[in-house]
Amino acid sequence: MQSALNQSDIYKDRAHRKYFSDMKKLFDYVYDIIDVLGMSLFGNIEKLRVHKLYNIDPKMLSAIIETKLEHYFSGFECPLCGCKCRHNNKLKRHIETTYGTISFDSPYYKCKNCDKFYEPYVSALNIRKGKYQYDVQKIVAKVASSVPFDETAEILYDTHGLSLSQATVHELTNELAAHARLEEISPEAATIHEIIEQATRPNKARPVLVFAADGAMSPTRTEKGKPNAWKEAKGIRVYLLDGQHLAQVLSWHQICDKHRFKSFLQQIKQQNLFPEDKVRICCIGDGAGWIWEAMEEAFPDARQILDYYHCQEHIHEFANARFADKAARDKWLRETTNRLFQNKLSSVLAGLRRMKLTGEAAEKRDALCSYLSKNKDRMDYGKAKRGGYPLGSGAIESANKFISHIRLKRSGAWWKVDLANNILALRCSRYNKSFDRFFAAYEKSQRQDLGPARPHLSLCQGAGRK
Ligand SMILES: [Zn+2]
Image (tube, rainbow, N blue to C red; front, side):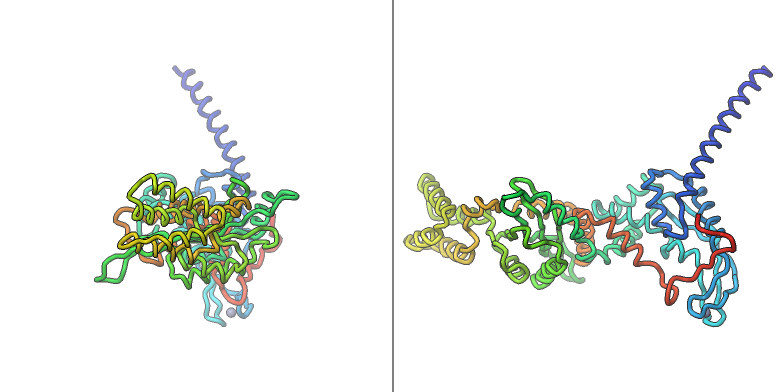
C-alpha cells in the first residue's frame, strides 16, 4: 500500500514538473512578445493572435503587463509644463478583453502647476474608456455586422465568455461604424493596381473596370407617430471584368438621396484608386436616372450600358399587352432583340411608332418608346459584348443581397437610417477586405490626447527596451 502511494506521488510530481516547465516556456514566449512601450494593449493582443496564442491565462497577461510597465516607467513629467509630478496613488484597473479580465495597478499623477491628472499606463496601453477593450469591440462589430445584436451577444458569450448586453453590442458597433467613412474602408490603391495588373494581358484590350449601381429597398423607421417606410439604399460595386472572371474592387452602399450618392462617386474618383489609362471604365445600371447623372459627373468618359435584362423586361411588358397571339409575340420579340444587338434601335422605335394601337397597348408602347429613347446610347449590346463589357447588372444585384438584404431585411426589423448606414458601412469594409486596416486606424485615432504630445514617460535608470 505504502509503496503504491509513493509510486503515485512520484507520477504526480512528474506531471507537476512537466506542466510547470511547459508553463514556464509559454510564459517566457509570451513575455518576449508583449511590448508595452511600442504597442497599445490592442496591438499586443493582435500580435498574440498572429502567434496563434488564442488561450492565454489573463492572470499571466496581467502579471506581464503590470511588471513590464513598472519596469519601464518610473517618474512622470507633466507633458504641459515638464515638471516632475508627484506620484499620488494607484488605481486598480480591471478591463475586459477577449482573453478575459486583465487587472493591474495603475499609478496616477498630479501636476500642481497645471492642476491636471495623468494616468500614464492607461495612455501607454491606449485603454479604451469603459469596461470593454478594443479587441472586444473589433470582434463585436464584426459579428454584429453579420447577425442581429442579440445573436452577437449570444455568440460572444459562447466563444469568449463575454456577458454583453444587447445595448453594449449596439454601442460598441455604432461607435466604431461612425468612423467607417468611404475613404476609410476603400481598398488601398496598391491593392487595386495589383488586381488590374494581374488582369492585364499583353497585346490584348485593357481590362474592363465596371461601376455597377442599383437601389435596394430597406425597412426604415420614421419619426414618432408616422408609419415605417421603405427607403432606397443606393449601392455601387466596382469590379474588374476579365472575360468571365470578376475581381471585386470596392463596394459602397448607403441609404441616401441622389445628391449624396453623387458625392460618394466623386469621393471614389478623388481617391485616385484607379489608373484610368490602364482600364476601360464602364457603368451599368437599370435605367434609374440617378445612376447616369452621378456617373456622368464623376467619369464622363465611361461607357454606359443599360442592363440588358431590365431592358428585356420593359420590352416583354409591352409585347404581352400588344400581342394576344403567342407566336406573333415571340416573333416580334426575336426580331426586336436581334435589332438591338445590331444597334438598330431607330428601326425598333420606328416600328413601334407605326403600330396602330389604343388603350393599354398604346400606353405601354409610349412608355417603352420613351424608355428606349432615353437610353438610346446605352444599348449597343452587340458591340458591348464583343468588347468584353457586361450586359447585365447581376453583380450589383447580388451585392444588394449579400451586403444589404441579408442583414437589414429581418422580420420585424425597422432601422433608423443612420444605424442602417452604419451596418452597411461595416459590411462594405468587410467585402472590401479593409476591415482590419480600418479598425487599426480607428484604434490609433482613439488615443487620448494628454496634452501637446503623448505624456513623457521617463525610463527607469538602467532599464531599457529589451
Ligand atoms: Zn504641468
